[in-house]
Length: 575
Ligand code: ISL
Image 1 (cartoon, protein in one colour):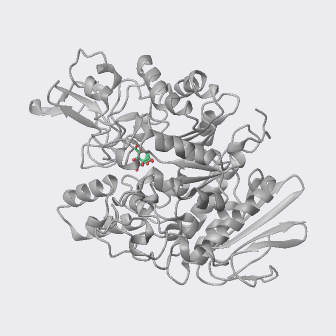
Image 2: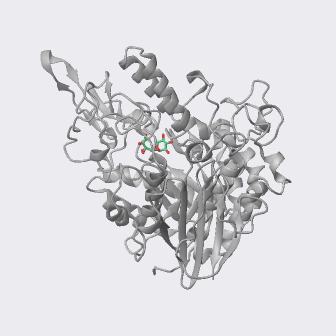
Image 3: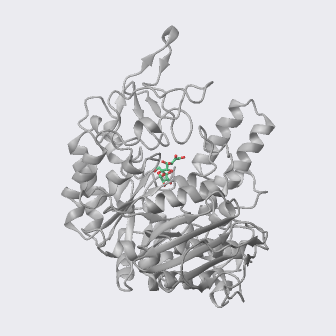
């Protein structure tokens, strides 16, 4: 592939659907595949080209389906394999592609492979997972093989009484890590998790935690960065292990290359641009593109995610510029996103979700995102400006294993200190994964039109659903939804500039406004966003040419104004 080659997965906009929370067709309070099918024309009308479906596989749901017990079956409350086949064909008949989530760092502990693996040390599948004997500390105390902390708090090792060994789980104890060192395991993963669905016509995968398959030889202890507890953050050891690139090459050579697919891999804890480029060069196919997490990690605590530290606008600008520019002059490709099912809502995190500002904020972020280089990802509900759960919700209203485990462990560790509890709660109110998982707000009827269940949805419906919902925005010309549609179509119309153009930020230390240029050949655009509620002076950057306003998120603006209103955004074409 050449540097400039245009392929469907570069120009297409991806819309992510979280099946539990999109649309319930059966009245059981949980979203399902037929529910998604019933909204397919809404999705088409939005102007997106690719749907990414979060895990819909058979699963005991300890981690909302990221704990898969059978790759070749569908979680029964979501529907059947035949329903997914119908979704594939209903997408394809409308010119939409469908990608699935590929979760192959770990399985559920209820997967048949793991059930066999844990039966005995002699079992043929013992080596399909990562089993290790205990270490013994002072006074013969049994200890895990190393000090790694799981992403969901506590040790990354679980003791198995039956066979007297520990198994590794980087996430929940119900999510044992697969042993990628074993070629027979890898082949089984390719056949069951990947090719089974490619044969059914899916167009690719979003690849979960893609840089954790290859573990460091000897599984060494992590350095102590969180004194006072045994378990330590260890991502610097288990991310980007020595065989990662080899495994991904193999996956392409043996399976993916046989089909016209796209892959987008999740690449956490990889700040080095040169390293990221090693995964995505098109002449050495491993992944077509990745999600680099700097933008969504802004403000997270360094040793514990839910110790929110805040961030400055200049930090956001720096990470955007870094990951917008790092592919310049290479044959690699990038992504643009600021939401997914693991994040707080962008309006609440990066702008303002106060009633007087939230619509304009949502439109400003839409304007900014649609001007960005790379494949654009939009998360369900982002298109109507959904916001974080209200601040008065209690921890009982949250469902996510990550927040709940952290809350419990931090509170216990502090001896129930109210100040710690408050700070953790405040952090969860900003960063909690549940904010994105609230039921989709379709209309102003009970439970936001998501479910007909009298007891409501599986997760509490947002209190504001009457003022933020699809139905009220569809026919309102200045709604957030219609602004997104306009922006997505401008993105297509000016795709050289917005999707393929180069990026340059101006005045990068300014903490109030974000001004950047996009350029492609002789074409230029300037994007201006006011990230404050106050008016800000707008000084045109020193770019030669006539500024012509392409779009603004404020009614009545003609582009000559030198003052930006609160949360105003504009795009100019410069001729
Ligand atoms: O640091 C992290 C967690 O706090 C992340 O970088 C983590 O690696 C990332 O969130 C992985 O997420 C994915 O895999 C998880 C699942 O729970 C998430 O929903 C999924 O997006 C385990 O499968």
